[in-house]
Length: 497
Image (cartoon, rainbow, N blue to C red; front, side):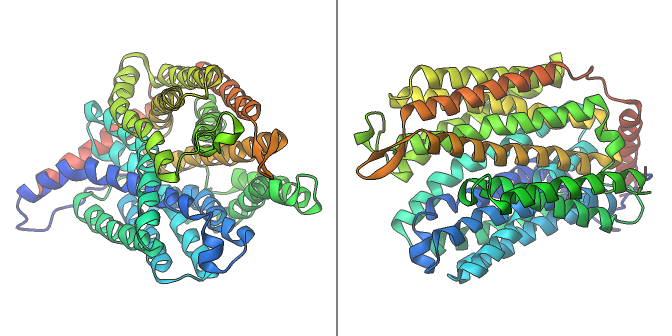
């Protein structure tokens, strides 16, 4: 593990500016996480109209979502590792910059090829949350760290809840490029604010970057997630999908072998195989699956035509407003999660969150016809997600050395992403299998939606069991030593100023 070194202030610098920057660190990092989630969500309302607007096929347009998923999954652990080695603020600023460049490209073009490439660039922003959490660990005192990490984890849901109605309003009342100009301006502001307000972490892990491990992980994840995301469209038994899954198994097996023998691996697999870390990753995968079904199913359910007998026929704007209470709840409950973790440990908070998610799906199964019950059930699921997502990084921070927090949290976010991708495929398969024609168009039946809720609720209960099986929460000795060294380096830097 690298030895922290203080970063001195320039001679003659006033102490007022550093104090102001310190106060703005948490808001700036949280706004970056919200902006990342907004960027990922804003394209959703556009998808039905993009084939007409870009003169492309629906299959080509779907790659605007797939490209972001693939690049985000690959770049999250890679940029997390780069942050541990070369500086977390530097890599965080670069990720926000790539996201902003992608938004500008979307604002300037209607060519589907350019749009897909731009969305791939925006996938780099998936690393914003793990990098920010690692910065918070390095820079904040223990008494402030828990609530800040919980808020940072909740930004994913908050941004998604804000992004959908915002994008729907822009699409309905303005040219669709306007939406990307707006996000470009917000992205540029986020880059500048991060560079000014966020200190560079003094904690580094020296060594050479594992290029071979990066290429192997990228190839394996692309094969795996491409097969998962395209299985419904290409056919789960088609030669292409089977070949992708076989290639994913072979490449990831070779990658695992290489990582165990690398001097400075991209992912420390010996750390991953520790029960406290490995079970936290398993819980992240299962929680990602359970959480994502809520957004997918709720949006389709409330927009279903009234002729189905259960649908409400809501517009995309009204649909976004239905999900908004869940985002507000995530903001309000993030400090509650931090207090529970401080009192009982993050393992208990994670288990409680997964149990609350299951309760939310029980509400959905009990009544999915009345709008207020739909909103209530979705909000309960969002509440449970807040508790679970806020506890996961705290578990990781307590289980890994300080010099590996960004890469370890990057892997944890990757597991959530895989869980969400599998959830999307599983929910789509259930709804396609349980459809009936309405006006000549196949529409999922209410029974299909209830099965999707039951599946997600069952997965949430498995996540609860996985959380309860995680060993005790106490921070490891390496973490305590690294935390003390970090605070000493920070204090030395302040004295040097």
